[in-house]
Every structure is written in structure tokens, then in C-alpha cells.
Image (cartoon, rainbow, N blue to C red; front, top):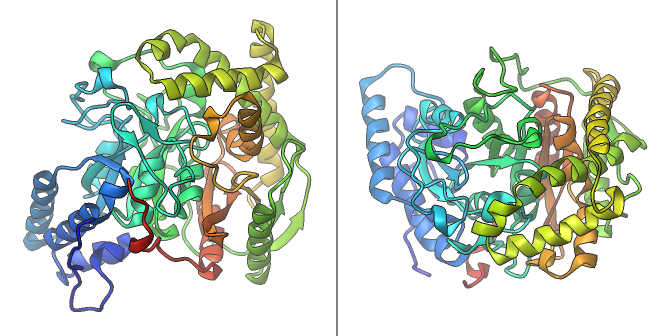
Length: 490
């Protein structure tokens, strides 16, 4: 890897690439350093770390520096700066960005250049973010692993033998390695929360509808399946909880073009929420938590209790029921997309989905009936109501992110038996999308050299409550960046 000179400023020895989004925005606003200096620092960091990790797959330095120069011109002109003015942010290869391919990791779509921005990308642009690179994902974004035939494999910055997560694995690896402080991702079954967990970052899946899912369409327009409309959301990943808070604030987009979009920005609360109730759910009878997962749960529960939260261990079977519904509602609609996946996808996605379908068949049968599918959606509504009633305005949930530590690389290609274990372990990732509640992954430290963490779930549009609890955990967890000299070799 290329050695670089760390770009710092007169305020201290911390390199600019290791500053939070708040520090960067404030420094640019107050002219402690320029947006151009910030962009140069992050481009240097990308040069130093990305060749090994392959987290970002389309970085255009000239464009990043031009965006930074424009931010500096706005700063010099005075007036109120945009919230993320000059702050580097990455975007994902399955989300439309003007002038960039929405490749989805598919070689046949390498030239599918977007004619406009998705609503969430436009929102980040309005916030002043310097859109600096596209993050890698698996083909069609349907694996908890990140690699494809177009862009290659992304590695976990802590251990090349374990997944960086998926499908926003490139985003999480880039954040952990310091390539960007904030990354845009999306999540239909853990694709923000699980990569954050695997790489030691923070990831937030917002309430359904809070961030618009609208895409400009054009040649790539397709009729989005119902599960995508009701479960898939865009959200932020970041190195700190506050980075994620600021990323979310920038991405919130009232938008009636989205089938579940909101007409106005809802009140999301402010930092400083009072201590409240935390219900700890360790196991829903699907997968026994690994000892490292149990330890992370113990630490987080104790820290929240020390901060004044009322913590209690509970059983909540509806989460297990929601997780099982996920494999019916999502996979049955993915079956309708299999001709396109078979035509354009790579071997990894075909093998992974074949084993996933086999695992789902153990619960729902080889060919679930239309009656089962209809009743599944009906049951979903009942579970949403029950969970909202349980949480109210004063309770959040503390769960594992996964019942296992970060999986070994390509574990979903190891056969049907291993995939059954993976799907069982991921029940906390699956339950949330079915219900549409906000949830976030927050690190608790390292276990055997790999990141560990927990998930927080709040009531709908109660993101501020889980962000506040995540801040408590973050303040007590011992966290470090993956050291440069330990980064894996590609």
C-alpha cells in the first residue's frame, strides 16, 4: 500500500480523515481548514486503504475536489452553511446518482448511467455533502456478503477471513477504514445494520417512509415488488452515533412519489431524551446466541442501567414470528425475479439464493400458497400494532444484531446446512424490515479480534430514542480503528 502523509490542521494531531462529521462541518464553517483540504485528506486515505479493501469502486478525485472548491466558495460568500457542507459521503452502487452507473454489481449493467439522483442522494447533495465514491455490494444486493463479478470482493478491515457484511459491505468497510465519515446504504434484511456490526461501525435503518425510496427510473425502471415497497429503506452508516444522526437528518425526505412516503417531515425529537425502559430480548427460539453475542448484550444492558434506564429481560415471541414471515414475503417475491437474476447475476448470488430458498421451504413448504402469502401480510399488520402498543413512547428494545459473530467469508456458499444456520442467526435482521420500525447497530468493542455490537429498536418515528441510547453505549464502549498495518492484502 502507498504510504501517505497524514493531513492535519493547527487544532491538533488528529488527521482530518479521523474527524467526525460534526468536527469537519464546524472546521469548514469556521475556516479552521477548507473543504478542499478535507477532500484531499480523504482522497489520500482512500489511496492508502482502498486498494486492500475494495470498499469504494468508483472514486473520481477531480469531481470530489471540484465539489470541495464549490463548498469553499460558498463558505467565503458567507451566509448559513449547509449542514454537511464539504463533508465526504459515499453512495451505494444500487442507488441512482447522476452521472454514475447504477450497476447493482452486474457486469451487463456497468454502463447503466443514471440520468438523475435518487431522492436520498439529492437530499445529501442539498445538505452540502461531498459525494465521494460509490460503495460496493453483492450483485442485486441480496447477500450478507459483499462481492460481485463486476467490481470484485470487499474485505473486512479487521479480518479478511470474515465478511464485511452485506449488502452495504463496501459502505461499512469504507467508514471503518476512515475513507468517509458517513455512508449511504439501504436495508431490506439487515443490509445496513449487519455490515456496520461486522466492521465496527454504526448503522441506522430508519422508520419506513422517513427517507424516500424514489428513484428516477428511466431505462432501469421496474415495478417494485410489494416487499421492496414495504421493507426496503435507505439510511446512514457512520463511525460515530452523531455521524449517523447527522446523516439521517440530511437524508429525511418527505416525498409522495414514494408509495409509503410522507407528506411532511415528522418531528424526530432532540438529543437529551430522558432515561426510559429497555426490554432486553436475547433469544426468540430460533438461534441460541454465541457467547460473544451474550457478552455484548450483557455489557450494553449494564451500561444502559448505569445511565438510569430501567432494564428488564423479556420474551417477545412476535419478533420470531416476524422473522419467519420475512422468509415468506421476501423470498416468494424474489422467486418472481429469478429469471432476471439467473440471466444477469453471478454464481455467488445464484448459489446463495438456492440455499436460502431451500431453508425457507422448511418453514413454508416448497411452494407456499397464495393463501399463505395473503395471510402473511395480514398477520404483519397485527404484529406491527402489537409491537407499537408494547413500545409506546417510553420503551425501546435491546437485541443481538446476529446470534453469531461476523460470519466467515462466503459462508452462504458452503451448502444448505450452513445457510440454515445463517438465516436462523439473522432473526434480528429479518424481524425489523417486516415490521417497519427503526433499528440501529451500535458497536460494543472487540471479541476475539472481531467487532461486536448490539441492536436497538424503537417505536415508529422514535429514532431519537434509540440514537440517545446508542450514545450511552458508545460513550462506554472501547473502540479503535482497524490499524493500517493489519489491513488485509487483496
